[in-house]
Length: 448
Ligand SMILES: Nc1ncnc2c1ncn2[C@@H]1O[C@H](COP(=O)(O)OP(=O)(O)OP(=O)(O)O)[C@@H](O)[C@H]1O
Image (cartoon, rainbow, N blue to C red; front, side, top):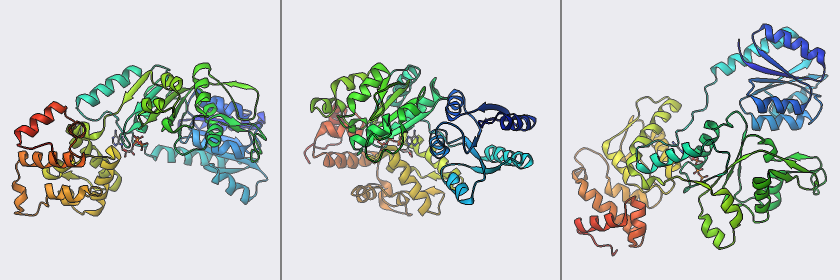
């Protein structure tokens, strides 16, 4: 058996006994005598299992467990407890303990438990990582090249892109492929958070900082020490909190709410937004100094409609994933269904593509999906089915030429944009001049 485990117990005798047993089983064993040392070990390198004494000095185990669960979801936590009741065991498991073992520890029981944990970890399939750069379009190739260049820099990164373009997926890639990969990645969505909640989440608070602050709380920045913080929807960050974030980025120092003592922290910020931050700076919703600080390395993820040539590849990758997840091998699309996917403007981007395909797979018993299996959102569905009608034998629309399909699609996008050629061209992913040329060659007018 192999794996890295940590025995966290203030009693050196317990540590030595457990260490001997586990080393005989082939585990690499580390020791900690308080909660601080547990965090230190976990920060340095990933651990498969942490054996945690219920009365470990430092942060109380009831606080430590959910914290570890959140920051290190892949580490198994086993609590060792003296005179513990069933209620206590249930409470510990609810807070994130995977197993519970009464003290004094019976070594054969511990040995068996570690074998089970090892077996469960061995058979647990790793979460599937999504490739943020799937596609051959110049826009996505350029994004990958820029992301590769900025990946290893410790400077803040700003990811911009419409909803569902994969900003979160790219943030994970930047962290997991970068030099901080073995340190925590902590994520927070700033949308809709009150300034006080956002501040305590980020910076933590001291005891009595406000009425309900009965104990001290470590903020996300501290938990992300040496790792990365992913702040999603950073454009929604309350203006009261923005200068405090700027201070952390510039001086690497901050204060917990209600404390005077300054703490230092080393984090890499990855921020994301679907908003136009420059416009927000202009309207004074976002501080200019913070914008300049976080936007030195900007990455813009293109919308799906700007790279329609990537849609078939992305759709097939999603179908392969769905095949594995749902046990439905050989999922495919008819050429007409593929064309319908390419023609749709995808306001919800990759998230919507995945949803449309998942719904189609779940609702259809066919393994080759047809146009009528695809259900697009709202108004688009009627139009899509008009343009790409059912694939029943002999359907006259099957005889539509590509030119006719193109004509119908351009008309539809122009209508949706109220005849605005610039915006329609953007949606179609082509330059304005090309759209004018196409309108002319198809005998269409931009007036709708
Ligand atoms: N590279 C990708 N390959 C396949 N699917 C993807 C990819 N990127 C994103 N998705 C799909 O889109 C969903 C949304 O991704 P993500 O949350 O990263 O987008 P986002 O831009 O952060 O969205 P929001 O603006 O709403 O926060 C994912 O759960 C996944 O289903």
